[in-house]
Length: 452
Image 1 (spheres, rainbow, N blue to C red):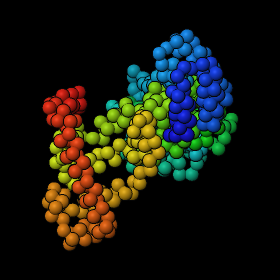
Image 2 (image 1 turned 180 degrees about the vertical axis):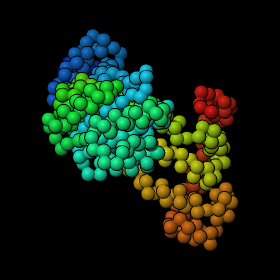
Image 3 (image 1 turned 90 degrees about the vertical axis):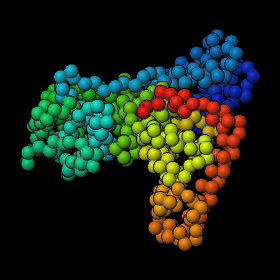
Image 4 (image 1 turned 120 degrees about the horizontal axis):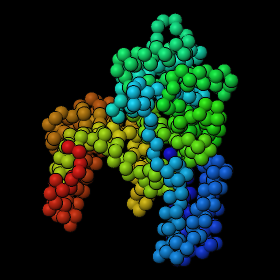
């Protein structure tokens, strides 16, 4: 996500840092490079131009030019303006004081609206709500069946409606009544889509809006189509009055033009982004965090949140202690691998790290998830005794482990060698200055504030 743009911004910053004193010429050159980077990222032309003018005006101001570190001040100015461009702050969903609240999902065919409806229900259920899904798409073959399957896979309740009912308005009415009777606080309505915006679609959406009085009308757009997604959102908003936007397939969008442009063009906030196929690959849009990722500063807050959701804090503390004592087993290694993989694809996790110093370029590292699966399979094919004492794994045991994990003896040998090297490295580290320093620290102090 934003890989191309991040790389270009990093290059601009590097050039600025190389100058002892910034001049107007330096800043104008940097602004030209940033403008080119934004346009190549498929950012709306007017949005890019307005952004550059605001940054240039501030960068040429006395506060920047007379500061002790003008290049850093320019970076801060770009960062602040990028946050403002993306919306300033995260905008939460609105709910009625008297449930159920209705969320109307809008979008064109192929944007991922049905999948996103199920993801949103899953997200709501994990954040203290009791959602219910309903499809009122009575035109596309098997559309309602598709949502039903997704709801079942996500473990979310769905209202299917009486057999033979083909009125979108009646289905919506009955779904809301069912939500009241079953104590659901939110109804997510997956509406019909079209290949393009037409009068019939708009009339149906307007009638549903009048009937349901939704607290949210969310437009679902495919980030991969760039400015076409922005233009469609603008049209829907002009005709329907959107309250927010969800961009899907952000994990496959290296440019990011739609995410950067959409708030300025539509005037409506980007509320969520989809980052993959899994139901939990869906998160709130935080302008400050995304600005940090675009500019190579990372998104450590989101990384911490993912870690807290995925990892058992008690187990993590125990493993940390054993790691510094170089006393971790293959069982510990497998457990840690499982918890890290719960955070999502490794390329996304690496993409949240700051792209500076030793971490620079790490986001581009290609992590083969199949190799991680293979590693987990090899360790899982060992007995408990073998996982806790690798030294007993002789030739015959290695053959058995290879057969059990569907790998080769060579791959088992390579894993054991890497494990021994890791233990040796941690032993060296723990016996050094940093290890002695950490040994003096209380475990409670190291993890103060961590969830128990």
